[in-house]
Image (cartoon, rainbow, N blue to C red; front, top):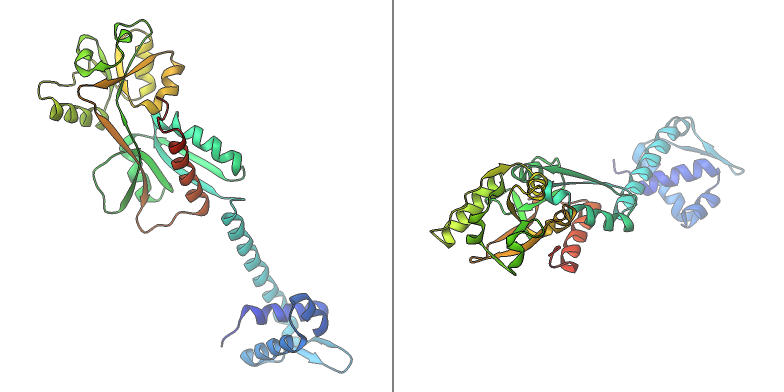
Length: 302
């Protein structure tokens, strides 16, 4: 049995209009083509769907029985097709994005706001989480994509480079470091250093040690969030280090920042997606908006 959508739509059109002529006009086909579709449907089902006479055409008993079922099938299908069209046109949809807490309160809100101006009906759900859990949320399917710093390679996760930026020193206005145009890593040893816990500090310590054997990162305080570190710096409890995409948060705390050199150490950031899993049109558009924002603001807040 090979029943087509064209045959079912022809059946509904004739049943509604009670006329082959009117039904053919509504479907933009010839009357002979419509008659052929009805004949093919009746042959496939093995039953007569319409009782015909010289004066009129009407549904048979079988036709009346299956009409509401076929009508519902086509309505449901049309609803699905409309939903797909809306998703493709970004008239609806939900995008879930995972990002570290610092990026979630600096770079991502700017991107989401820009995207929302163009596509106000698409919902964006931002998951702010620990750096270490971004990739796992992408892998589990909890989010469409994630944004974060480089991680150990994973064959199930695709990592597309987003940007690469150097570390900066952050300190209060009037601090001794403010007199320097650029700050050496060695300059930080004279002040209490506040850093973030976990891979942020661990990877940075390794990079520093590889670049200069005699230089080790020796923080006096380790905290979970950059907002905590900045608040402590603002209170005069020490200095900290960050990536310049966080400049808006640094300015919010009325702090200053300078590039760290000798050596210059950078950190790469990526967009993470699950291999073999395609993005929805809305997610793909938000991802493109993120890359466009970074291109247009290449210094990411420096």
